[in-house]
Image 1: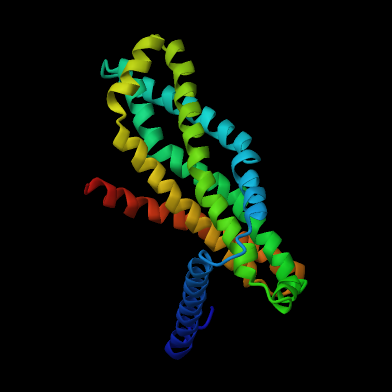
Image 2: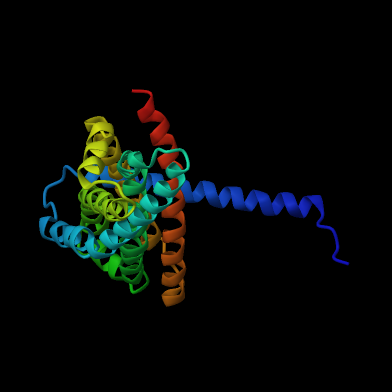
Length: 263
């Protein structure tokens, strides 16, 4: 039989975890403050920002579009089957359109980008940190936050809404493919989407993606700069980035949805 853990040991272990979490949040907050502070400085890294934007918006488009297309097809298939039991199958387009614009498009895009771009940012900056390239940037009188963090944050924050708009379109088109097979006319499907989805819904979804892009990019940069332990540490930082950013996206989605519904 295993021995019971003494209350003192449990309290000490819990206290250490709480202090470690507070320390992590403090370091993250400092990085956020430094990032906003360097935005107005001279020497804005335009070329690096464009390169990072290409990585986010162009190189991630294929996997995002494939994910959105098949998610829309599955959603339409399940929705048409469920609504058909109540004689409401023709309204499949309304459900698919609203679900994608408000939730599935922004969240799925953010999760896919966090797995691809977020992990890449963390691995790249983490490798530079353990190989002392970040220290070399400081030694040359440059600010690593301005050179490394700012371009990636801006590129991800601005690139995610563009990917989300494409994901919304492909998801709704994927639903159309299944809806026509279920006996729903293409024109009726189209009308049911535009009659339900409003401009406010589109803007609400895109506002979420701005927050998601900022969050996952800052988490990735923070984990990369905090990397220790050589190549093993880079792997740990990459894994931690995907986990933390995915949880942050899902949690923030709930609170953003509640906030948007108040207006």
